[in-house]
Amino acid sequence: MVRDERPAHLGVHRTKSTDLDVVTVMDTRSEELLRARLADARSDDAVLGEEVGLSGGTSGLSWVLDPIDGTVNYLYDLPAYAVSVAVVVGDPTVPGAWSPVAGAVMNPRTDEVFHARAGGGAHLLTAEDSRPLRVATGEDLDGALLATGFSYDREVRVGQAAVIADLLPRVRDVRRMGAAALDLCHVAAGRVDGYWERGCHAWDVAAGMLVVTEAGGLVSGLGLDEPASEDMVVAAGSRLHPVLREELQRLVQGRPRTTPPS
Ligand code: IPD
Image (tube, rainbow, N blue to C red; front, side):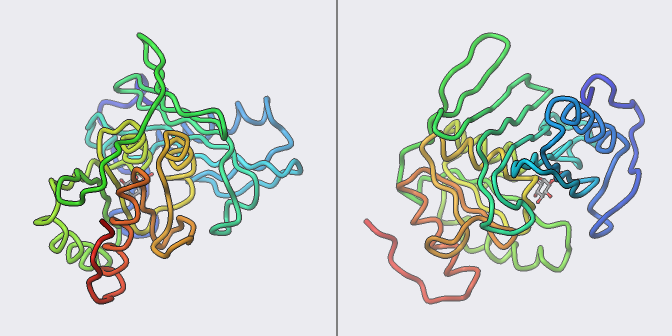
């Protein structure tokens, strides 16, 4: 529906947190469709969706939905957007109080479905086949291709630009593709070596986080043993992850430069 029924002259329906944080009619329609399907199949579960918010349940499971991740790409018809669906245990509104048990991220423009089940591995399903996903294994920041994203808040972007200015000359390159859920899945597939972003919400990352960890990678916040949260998501293979996390910690918190572990 998101792909096939996209209006030719799609416009901004409304804005949310800032003037840059847009919603289209299709974000709303996609979430309504997901909610209707879940109400039929899983009526006791809670649902947290980007556009509608939280609807309570009794089972202890919550579905965390991003009906269109990469809405700005979708608005411009750039083919890098996704529908992200995860089911989590715990409270998805409290950072660190939930963990995903299954999730899927679909890019309807490439017909790729990245999916994972806790303990069951991560896979990429296409029209041709299904294959297991594995993160890249490098540990070298110099040679790392990284992905990131920017806030919808223009002020926050000033700090994000400073981090990029420091990191960019010291890595292979940095991509800003515009859909956090896909960025995480690209880490899982080894299409980028690592990803970081500040300001992501649970619906942006819940499914993609599980896809990364089930593909052998690590996902955390800024501090050692800190869970990923709105404050920071850092994802990479297990050898690069500590190097990237420490660099970001230094850059974000203004800590003295530390030597990356060899
Ligand atoms: C956004 C995208 C973007 C990221 C933002 C997210 P949305 O999600 O994932 O790449 O930089 O942090 O909010 O608004 O398109 O669902």
